[in-house]
Length: 551
Image (cartoon, rainbow, N blue to C red; front, side):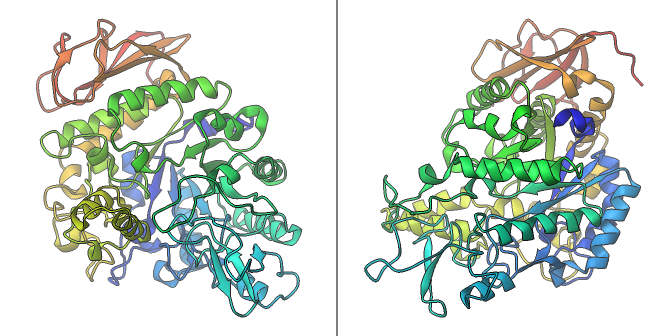
């Protein structure tokens, strides 16, 4: 699969959360014309592919991941003509256009669901409908967003299944008519110029027909999350293989699956070349699973494990997206070493094997948000986390601190373009609180500063074009000499690069292997790397051997 699309390996993908990127008309909501206005900024950064989170018609129960019409644009975001122009402008700049495909579920306001609730053919079985059991929900399954995964529909006299919000009923892929709708939808968007798909929550497509009760620890409100019954099902992989065989490969679409895994080994089932499913995958790991981990060890173990698991596949390398806290706040030090740790984390991510993803604002070192109460948070997941922890016995202060630290709103605050009011994002009232640190962290200031985080990202992205080892080199882990130091080599027949990153607030001796021509380092504003010591959050990339002539 990869061999037919060698250009996939040359991508650096920039994720845009349209609602928060740039507002062109002053209504407080980012939009597609706003993305068009900022394409030159993205071209200067050097990325060559854009992935836009959903911009389709939606009632916005889950900020656009509840789609009511897959062939219409949410009016807040613009028009279909705006979308066509955005795709055209991307292609004119040599950028690929990747859209979010959300087909595990739709909105309950989609015409399909309304007609299914009325038992109209052919929509009757587009969703999962079950009769009540003893007057209650069909089983004990929990929803991701709290409460039962079943909601009663008076009109139909049955319950429908929703793994996520009750306004996000799951689509029934075992229904041939529904599956054909989705195949037609992909062809329709390809005809409009879309180059690729990031496929949302794709690990849950197949469900057991009998919907048995789940076993395990119940949530505080008494339900059990059914992940063991849903993940890794052969039916899901059969659906994905069919998509690849009939659509992804013939249409030359780059594909990125958002996958939930029973364990890391299952990643190979989605991206192994022989499997014929996705080009690469984004494993969905809630930040709670990593929250108390020793960050350098966790990153080291994950990098080594995933590289060994899929030797014949490809990797999506990312540290943040619209579902996670800001990476400099979660993995780095967003106070004393904000700029330096932002650069160090960028070096680790972009020097790792695979396609690097940049989430909007990451290239500025934007930080997570700090608000005062749960009522100020927009995210449905944050509010549910707070409620669940209160039910589990946390004090309101404990529940709030935990939910706020991991909130998806941390990454969804408006992009910080300038020191103007509302960070230059809008002339109106922004839909979500702007991070108050925007006067000191914004694109305008960083574009004017040659040693800013932005220009560090620009140089880092440019290095991929002249150093094949960063694109295709084999990975060799190196002993960094201390648990806080992550070190590895990227090697091809003609080149060897070494990265060592001190991911801590303490200085440590540098690894002996870190000798060579310095290509990039996180301490740009100060003296060069001395060869002996890695200062706090110092990351250094060196070339130790190269027969490659720079272009």
